[in-house]
Length: 209
Image (cartoon, rainbow, N blue to C red; front, side, top):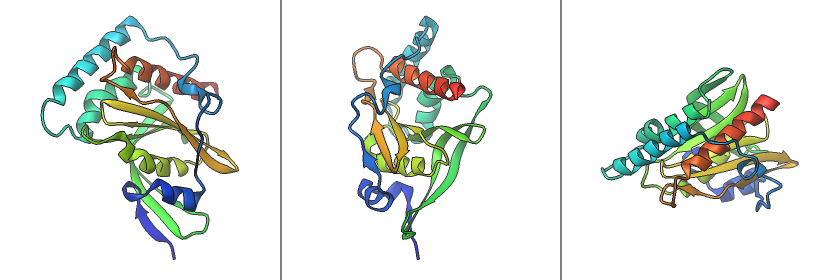
């Protein structure tokens, strides 16, 4: 009889032991999509992203920047600029998923915050956290969701509004994943330019397939 685990409570060790998930320390070959040939960001887009960054620093001055505020104030404008609201893409929120381990001993259940699809193909899995939480809190959770995709590779994004990290999951006999560097709004300049570039690149990949 399978043990049910909520995705928000799963650990990386459980994903490793029950689903054979492996981390690839990326050398640029496994996950080049966040590093090379990124689309250009226009001046108009930069102006929008500068306003998003300014709004973020305003909002964190007040208590409890919750997940829905992160999604509304930071995530939604970036997804709009990346073209993720346009046909043939569509978005589901709170998408229910469950995945059973190979030994049938563990079932992981949860709801994806934001799932971008092209028809039934998973384009991007997004996990958002409240501003005061580290994005590391959502790492095992989003990987559990990504393991449930019917197609691989699968891309993911974790954000708390101020920090962003992209993930890629592939099946090479066993599931393997790698992560981008952390893009953070406290860095000099505006790392949202890079975040938008990666999102545009991911979108391009699915229109080439």
